[in-house]
Image 1 (cartoon, rainbow, N blue to C red):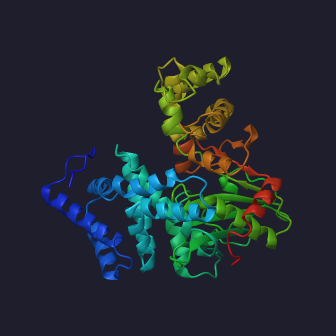
Image 2 (tube, rainbow, N blue to C red):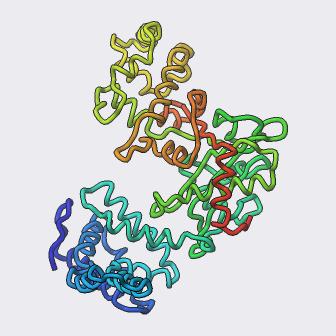
Image 3 (tube, rainbow, N blue to C red):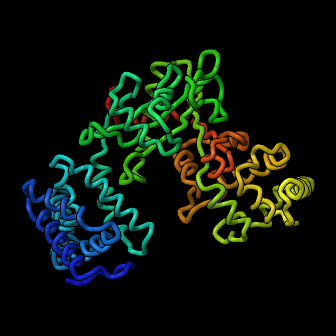
Length: 457
């Protein structure tokens, strides 16, 4: 068998033997119509024994070894392309035969795992490994990712998915799971999770019937009077949240978490949002506005900071253009005040901004906040709406998700000082964004997706 051509250091002879044996087990699985459970379990156990850094080699091996061979499809292709004025039924029969021939043996093998307990979860974790290998290495594993994604897309349909509302009466296991998997606004204690399940709070989780005890994605919402523009209106540490005064007319989605890395890019967040909107509407007909209060991940460390350093080649924004967001009066005030309070000797704005924003203490200085507020919000709006990746989608992943689902954003939706927790200041200079879902658009999409999930809430 051909040795894989990977981008990491070549594995040891023993490691390569393990990889080869594992590939042989997967090949055995795909060759059987109904492989025994112990064979599938043996594959899982052997796969987990391979160190994570060597798993890309295994993916490379099965891409090279387990593939449809040319001679298998030559004859059916020749027959298909040589037919003229063929009967439609005969044409369908020929196409069906070809489809059977060209199905990836890897896909046949992976499909078998849904028949055993824990097999679905195993495939989720395996795809997460594939995505990691793609992200940190140079191997092209797209065919493998496409095959597993295709299976997931077929398994995440209709009756396979169900929605549940999580309340204070839900099981301790469910509540603890959500507390441990909230990566947007992490919690230090179960009491904090309890606060997020209060009277003016809602939490919904989407489950797959193959994993009924472990949600695949969940969302936390606050019911407010008017648009919440600060996280501190929603998350109040050590106290019971009270919400806005008066009857709520707005639902604010402030935390959406995918609990399974292997489901990245499959669009389950969209499914969840529209099902949650439907559930909230049924119980709260007065809710007319649906919006997020979202972070801007990477705004400082991966965007503003490198641009100020002159590392602006990947971006539409350049250092000179960024500095134009600061009027001359603001530039002079920031430079002079930084010299006064921090002893700074820099006279160029980029260096001064690097100093100021590199220390989260700036948010407590009224002079800094006075002159930084408008430029930072304008730069953030540019980042959200103008910066694009190679696929032409918003560079910021949260913006890409919500705007791709139909949400809209305007300059007034970028909120300064909205997250004064350390995490928010270090990640996005304390800024947050309201992505607003219009009522008309939600109704249109809701009708389209109405039959996708059963109503279990």
